[in-house]
Length: 237
Image 1 (cartoon, one colour):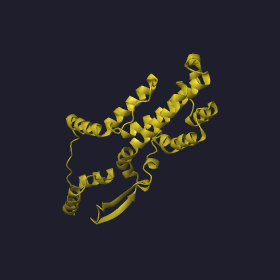
Image 2 (tube, helix red, strand yellow):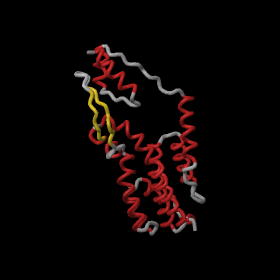
Image 3 (tube, rainbow, N blue to C red):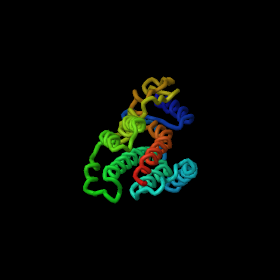
Image 4 (cartoon, helix red, strand yellow):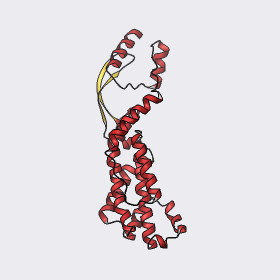
């Protein structure tokens, strides 16, 4: 039986790029004598070569900096860009949400003060711990957000910002279905082909999240850039 399982898994592995094994099952198979080869992680040179290739593909798709951004905004843009260059798409999405929140609060703070020349840094303290939901309402009252943009940012808060900030991986990967997955019963050796919804299978959520991040990151950063370029001109005149 060990030889059968070994043969089945070897044949399936030749035609697969991802294998997911329950840790308990893996230990059982090892104790039964099924051999497993350890694949070494990529070297630093291999990793950087891949990231460099990704950076050249992405750089032409990135938005330009807004005109005359405050230093903190410029730093956030640069951090997001570097995350995207190095394939850290989940981090780039989280940082894009931070960019929106910071610029929203900053714009409201300066608008309420009547311009940079009148701003008192002590008044900024109240914004530091303000939840994004309250910051959106504060910005509306200050006149820096119209109803449509407020609605869009609030939708972003619920669908992107909160799930990524709290690492709600089930929500992030909801709707993803791994199709035609070959599933092996290690007791009987029976192989079945199934579709697995990420929402129902925590074991595959970590596998599909990088794919979700990669497909979302550019749209998320583009939205953050749109919000910044909508807000900052209101306090630069």
